[in-house]
Image 1 (cartoon, helix red, strand yellow):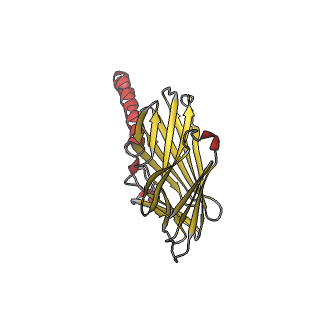
Image 2 (cartoon, helix red, strand yellow; image 1 turned 180 degrees about the vertical axis):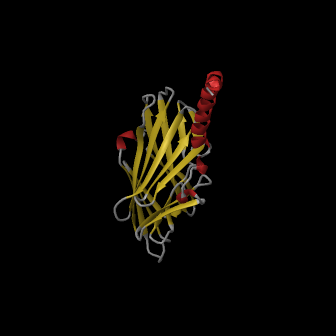
Image 3 (cartoon, helix red, strand yellow; image 1 turned 90 degrees about the vertical axis):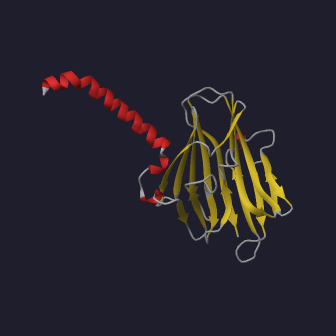
Length: 238
């Protein structure tokens, strides 16, 4: 036995190291296979009588939906329309590796987006009555002069949107029950908002406004450090 270990010890160590690397990669690259009953289906729902979160695991839409007390979407975070600019190089948030975790007891959900030399961690949580918070954390293993994140908020349709210096207020006339409803988005770290157009209407037609973006800028981020890039609170008043 000792002769066997002496002869093959180096090979065993190399195989163990290789297995460790592969396992670490698959935890990120094959994120949809992370075990746990909350991730067994395509949709994760955290619902309260006043507000809820519905996360679509597969696809670039509904990541997440913020819903009213009956489960109807009032605002959608969409990865397809959200984008990340790294020194001029642009990509949407969908075409990358994704990982997910959920804590139903605490009403929290985590979503990781992994690109080439960068990573975004999105944390979603139910807060006070009619409120939810969404945070975006950024980290990188490379040096960038400017990181610009555009977060897209979608709803089909808002009848009116009022941009503010730190967010926007949106109204809809077709809420359940036929009564006007108001959705307010407040940016909790307004100093990170872009100076050149922090709140933008991304999609509008004759029916109303369907997509509003908030734009955040981070300059010369420290390498290998998790940095809060965007923090938003959604408040719904039916």
